[in-house]
Image (cartoon, rainbow, N blue to C red):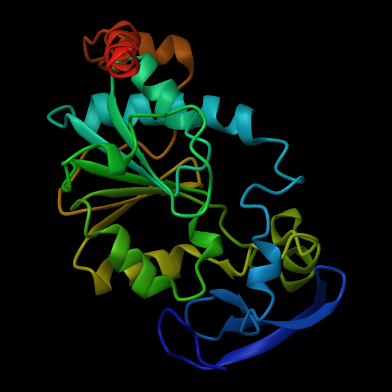
Length: 259
C-alpha cells in the first residue's frame, strides 16, 4: 500500500480489530511517517452515529478549542470577520464562538445541527470565508488530500485539530487515539506529513500546542508554538474588542419563528 500523502511505500507496523469484527493492518509511510489503515470497508457501519459514544470529551474539547482559536484569531488573523466550522457536528463550537463575538457558521453533511440552527452554511448565501476550521476531522479522511482540497475551497486559511502520531511503533500500537472500537479514525499524521500537505497546496504550515495545525497563505513571522498561560496572555497578547452575537442571534431566530 502506498502512502496517501506522499505516495511512498508503507510498512505494516501492527494489526487491530476494528469495530470488534474487521481485521485491519496499520501501515506507516517510510518517508513521512503518516499512518493509515487498510482500505476502510467498515465506514458505513462506523457512521451509523456521527458522534460516537466514546467521544465523551466533546464538550471539554470545544471549550479548550474556543480559547485556542480566540487567541490565534486575535493575534495572527485580526483582520478576519467570517468563519466556517467544517464538519461541525452538533454545532457546539459555532455557538460558543458566536457567544463571544465571532461570526461563525457550521457545515456538516452527516450530523444533526442542534446548537447552531439558522447559522448553518445552508442558511446563508456566503460561500467564501476568511477562515475555515476543521476540528477532529483529519483523522476521519479516507482520501486526505482530496478532502483537504475540498475544505480549502471555503477559505485560503484552514485551521485543523488532530493529534500527532507517536514515532515509536510500540507507543503507536497502544495509542488511545486509534479508537478501533468506533472505526472512525483511519488516518494519523506526523509533522512531516503535515508539512508535505502544506507544500502540495502552496500553504505555510504552523503548529500550535502540538494539535492545532494551520495552513495559510499568510506568513506569520512571530508565531508562538504554545498558547501562553492566562496571566502572560493578558500582558503580552492582543484581545480583539468584540461583542457577543447571542442577543442579535436571539432576535434573528425569534423573527424567523414569528414569520
